Length: 168
Image (cartoon, rainbow, N blue to C red; front, side, top):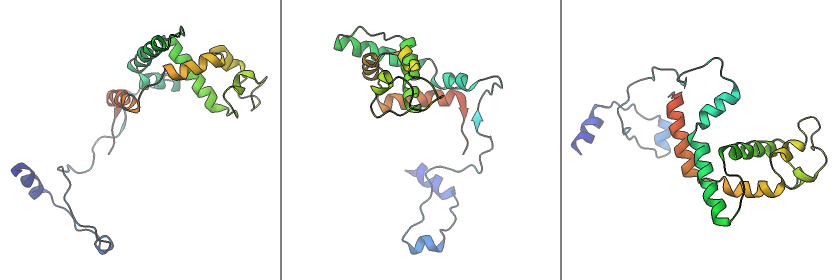
């Protein structure tokens, strides 16, 4: 408690604008000592000028995320008695399919596998999704390659810490 009071006694807190106090806001010091403006510039820690957008995505996802998805998929497939592929390659196929489904919206997911052509000419044909999965396999993949938001957040935060210098 004494350390807390000591820290707050050293922080110079500017007064609130009158409009804020008129609305009922009260001045409270911040819970940490401010060290002034952030000195570094935010961005990638090790900027590789030859890194492609796909390479940057792979760096962001790292190895831990596909491995975790594969591990969860194996457990789900075993639990449900499925013989679907649960490898890291299968994860990347599912990842590509999710992006493909996001590019062209169909009324129903099944339409992407049964319609003769894409609903948007020239973007990509349905053969792209059919090369990755059939409809039944895609439905299984959606259930197998699923992590909680907390797991995803933890993995992404670790990767961001490795790759990015934060800005203020």
